[in-house]
Image (cartoon, rainbow, N blue to C red; front, side, top):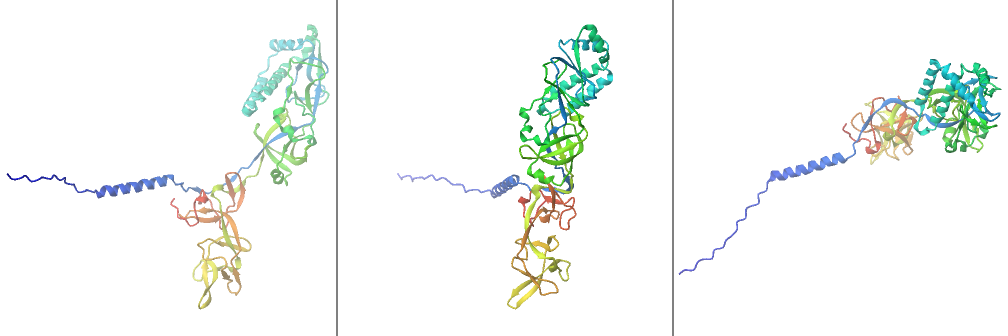
Length: 466
C-alpha cells in the first residue's frame, strides 16, 4: 500500500491594499486642522481708523472750603427753636432762634402752625425742589449727607411754619404763660447750623491732616434740642468772598505755574465757573492751590469739603491709540544735499560708490519721513540703500557729507496701501489710552487713514491683508 503524501496547509496572505486616496485625504485634513488651529491661536493684526478729536484731561481734586465765619454761642440753657433755615441771609436784628427752659414754645408753635397757618403751596414746591436737588447729587460713598440734609429740611419746614406765627407768638406765649428768650443777629450774613471746629481757619493754617475725613465730624443744631449755656448754636458767614484750598503735586505746580485763573466744575452740583488761582504754603510747609470766589457762597454753606475738576482746554488734532505708536531711527541729512533724480521726479541724494575704475557718483532715491529747519530724516533701516559711513555729494558742488548722525521719531504704521509704512507724528496731548497728534503735517497722518492698532506686531514693509 502506497504511503500517503504529507499535505501541508499553507495560509495565503492577501496583498496589502493601500488606499492612496484615504492617505491623501488624511494628510490634507491634518494640514487643514493645523492651519485652522494656528490661525485661530494667532493674535490678529487689527487696524484703527484715524479720526479728528481731542483728549479730555480734566483733573479731579478734593478741596477744603474757607469762609469768614463767626460762631455764636448760647446765652443760656434750654430748648432751642430755629426761625431761619440753613443758608438764609439774616440782617442785623433778625430773629435767629428762641430759647426757653420748659420746651413749651415748641408745642405752642406746632399748635399755631397746625390750626391756623398751614405751609403754603409755594413753600411746599421749594421743599420739593430741595429734595430733588439732593437726590441728584447724592452719592452712596457719602451716606452721612443724608442726616445733614434731614436737619436742613427740618429747619426749612420750621422757617416756613414761622412766617405767619412770629408776629403773634409773643402775645400767645404771654397768654399761655410760656417764658422764652428771642435771640437776634448782631451782624448781617448767611446763617448755618453746622459747627465743625474748622471755623476761623486761614490759608496759613492749612495742613494735609485737615483733609483726612475719617475723623471729621460736624454738629448740627435743630429745633427742639436741649442745649447748655455757652455751647455753639449757629454760625454766620459775613462775606460773599470764600476760598477753596487743595493739595498740589509737583506735576500740578508745574502745570498751573503760569495760570492766574482756572475753570472749575463742581461734580455734585454739576455746574462750571471760573475762579482766581494762586498758591500758598501751608502750616506743614507743603504747597496748596487756592481758588478764590466772590459768589455762590450760599450754595456751599453746608459743605466743608467739595469735589471738583479743573477743566482744561481740549487739544484738537488727530486721536490715535497709544498702542499704535512706535519709534524708528533715521539718518540726519542736511537739506541742501537733496536733489531730484535726473529724468524721474524722485527725490534723493548723490552717493559716492567705489570700484576698480575709481570713485563715481550714483543717484539713490530716498523716502523722507520728516524735516526740520536743517535736516531731512532719511530711512536708516536694513533695507535702505544708504548706510552709516556712506558719503553723499552736494548737488553742483564737491562738498561731501558722511552719514553717521541719527535721531529717532515717534510714529505709526500706515496700512492704506496694504503694507506697513512708517508715518511720523507730533504729539500734542495724551492720557492713559490716547494721543492727540498734530494734523496737517507734511509727512504725517490724515483723517480716515488706517493704521496698525498694535505697532509691536508688525514691521515696516510687512504686507497685510485687511
